[in-house]
Length: 238
Ligand SMILES: Cc1ncc(C[n+]2csc(CCOP(=O)(O)OP(=O)(O)OP(=O)(O)O)c2C)c(N)n1
Image (tube, rainbow, N blue to C red; front, side, top):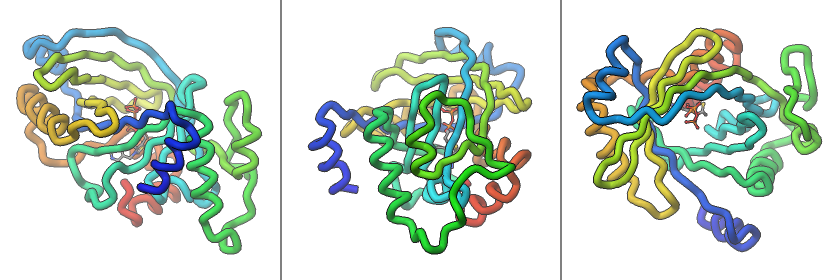
């Protein structure tokens, strides 16, 4: 990874990486009142559409890499810590939003895979290509859309000593609701401080369950792509 960071910085000097530290929680009927009580400010509601891409044999997601197009904006999330257990309450993912860097990173992973063992790449009946505008690079890398859904999001911000903490309340169009407490840590920033802020806000909201809460993707795959879901479970990615 060190070599990769050096080469990115050399090729794309303006590239900034961010680490998203996040804890998901189950939203109850009281959550909005609790947020107000602890001083959270509602900063707005919005709706967006996500499309997630992978190779037909799941090369990216089996490495815990998540390639997404959200309303035309590309993003690649990859694990910021290699040894984090799948059941951890707080997750840490590196986020890249520069399309050239995303393309370079994704193509490296695809190229490194053992091509001889891979299935024929391309569109099949149950892997439709999604409508994302320029799909040439996706086609060249053999990437197909495996999940597509819309989310209604209500966002709150809490100002804390170490910076802003965001709380999102999400409702996906397939009928799943989930909350997230999230801190974005700039490159080289203090991830431990972010973890502490999240834990403290979780306590203030009365979230005392030690059980990991499923994200939208878990539930989407479980319902719509059981093969993919089971592979990710077996690989301890989800
Ligand atoms: C609790 C948990 N979350 C995600 C993963 C891995 N993963 C699965 S899909 C996925 C990509 C989507 O990430 P997530 O933060 O869950 O989605 P969303 O809230 O819509 O994105 P945001 O607006 O915050 O950028 C990841 C990282 C995991 N293993 N465990």
